[in-house]
Length: 123
Image (cartoon, rainbow, N blue to C red):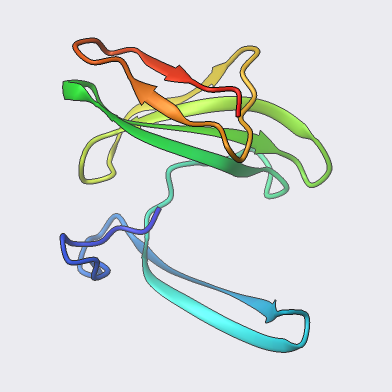
């Protein structure tokens, strides 16, 4: 997660963030690099092979912000999980695995008004 102020500027002075960078090829032809001065890590996977994909986030009333995602190894799906964070991105609940829920790229998450419940479409 990239931590920003209300104008979208990275919050570099926050001690909970770190600078991260990477590399990629643009359309397979041009090599590029990037750095982001305000990355806030929410996960601490057992292996560096695991990664979070298909992230979905939704504000759930006073409950906080729910971030749903799938965890994949480099070759296969492992599980779906969620983390609850406050409006500053601080984890309010540890990573929790969810049984039998898969997310697609087009899945949407809806908050059920007046409750702490959400509905996830199948995409």
